[in-house]
Amino acid sequence: MSSDQPATGPSESPGQTSSEGLLRSSGVTGSMTLISRVLGLVRDIVIARLFGTSDATDAFFLANKIPNFMRRLFAEGAFSQAFVPILSEYRSQKPLEAVQNLIGATAASLGGFLLIITLLVVIAAPYLAVPIAYGFTDEPEKFALFVQMLRITFPYLLLISLTALCSAILNSYGRFAVPALTPALLNVSLIGCSVLLAPYLRQPELALAWAVLIAGFAQLLFQLPFLARLRLVPVPRPNRDKEGVSRIKQLMLPALFGVSVSQINLLLDTVIASLLVTGSVSWLYYSDRLMELPLGTFGIAIAIVVLPSLSRHHAESSSEAFSETLDWALRLVVLIAMPATIGLLVLAEPLLITLFQNQNFPVEDVVSSAGSLRAYAVGLLAFMGVKIFAPGFYARQDTTTPVRIGVIAMSANMVLNLLFYLGGWAHVGLALATSLAAYLNAGGLLLMLKRSGVFRLHPGWPRFLFQVLLANVIMMIFVFYGSGSWSEWLEWSVLEQVVRLIFLVLAGIAIYLAVLFATGMRWSQFNR
Image 1 (cartoon, rainbow, N blue to C red):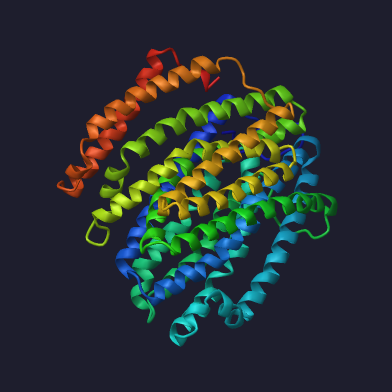
Image 2 (cartoon, helix red, strand yellow):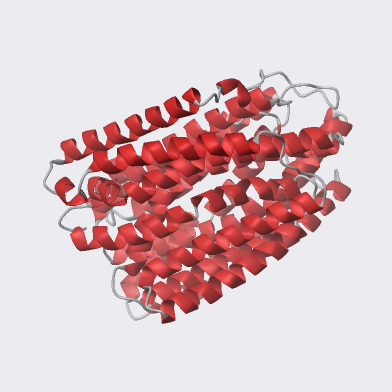
C-alpha cells in the first residue's frame, strides 16, 4: 500500500499498482475481511445463545433486512461500480479541486436522496410495515415491535451509503485496509450491545436494533480521518459537478437493474426452499455461510483491489497493462479457488460438525447441509471468476454488458431451480442451479472480454494449470484419507474436532504449496 500523502492531482503516483502492489493489497484486504467474517460467526453464536428464536428476534431480523436490502441496491454494488471508474478518470486527468468537487457533489446527491427516503420511511413506518410484515399483523405486540425496530435500523441505510462512498474513495487511492476492516465494526457493535446493553432494556432484543444504528455512525466516523489525510473528506457540495454526478447516475441505472435481478432471484430461491421440507432454508443458509468464507475473503478482496487498477489503466489508455491485470487476477483466482473447492467437497461434514452440530443441529441437519455445501462448492471457481471479470467492464464504464449476461444467467438459474425442484433434488438442486448459472455468467463475461479485445490469456497457462491440478490432486488424496470417516468426528469432543480440522487445513495448504514449489512455481510469478 502506498504512503498516506495528500492527493495532488493527475501527476500523483500513490496508489499506482504493479502486480506486487496488487498482491499485497489483495492480501491486506483479504486479511481484514477474514477478521470481519470470523467476528460475524461469533456474532451469530452470541445472538443465538443470548436471544434464541422468538417473536422479538423475528422482528429484528426482518426489520434489519429492509435497510440491508436497499443498501445492496443503492450503496455498495451499483454505486461503487459506477463511481470508482469516474473517480479514477478524474484522478488521472484532472486537478485535486475537480476531484473534491466530484466527491462533494456525489455526497450531496446520494446523501440528499437517501435522507428523504429515510425520513419518509421513519414517518410512515406503521403503514409501510403492513405489506412488509403482513404475517405480524395478527400479533399487535410483535407488529409494534417490528415498527419500532424498523424506525431504529432504517437510518443505517443513509449512514452505510455514505460509508460506501468513503470506501470507494479510499479503495481508488490504494488504501484498502480501512474499507475492508470497516464491516467488522457492525459485528463488534452487535456483540457488544448484546452483552452490555441488552440486560438493561425492558425489551432486550431492542439492543440489536440500536447496535445497527450505532455501527452506522461508527463505520462512517472510522473512515473520515483517513480521508482527511488525502484532503478528500466528502463534504456535501450541491451543484459543484452536475456533469460528473449525471454520468455516475447513468452508469448506476443498469447496474442497479442487475443487482435487482440478483435480489429477485435470491427471493425466488427462498420461496422455493420454503416449499420444501422444514429446515431447507436453514441448510442453504449454513452452506452459503461456509462457501462465502473463501469467496468473501479472497474473491471479493481481489475484485475490490482490481477495479481501481483497471479503471486507472483504462483512463490512461494502457491496454496491455489492463489485460495483464486481468490475467494476473484470473491466475490468482484459479490458484485459490481450486484448493478451496477441494477442501469444501472433502471436509463438508467435518466442517459442519465442528462448527454447528449440537442438540439443536443434529446429524440429519449436518448431512442435509453437506449436500448443499458441496453443490455450492462446485461453483466457487465461477463465483470468484464473476467477481474479477465484471470489473473488466465496470472499469471501462460499461455497466450494461454485465447486466445483460447476468439477466441470462439469472433466468437460467430460475429455470434450473424449477427443473431440479420438479426432479426431486430438493434444496441441493437450488444450490446446484446457482453454481451452474454462475458458470454461465462467468463464461459469458470472459467471452465478451476476449471479443472486445481488452483481454487475452498470456503465455504460460498450460504449465500453470498442470501445476495447480497436480497440487490439488495430491492435496485431495491427503485430506480425504486424513479426515477419515465423518461419523468418527461425532464421537470426539469439540476441542478434538477443532484441532483435527485445523491440522488438516494447515497440512493440506502446506502440501499444496510444496507441490507447487516442487513443480517450479515461484512467488515472483505473482509478485513481480
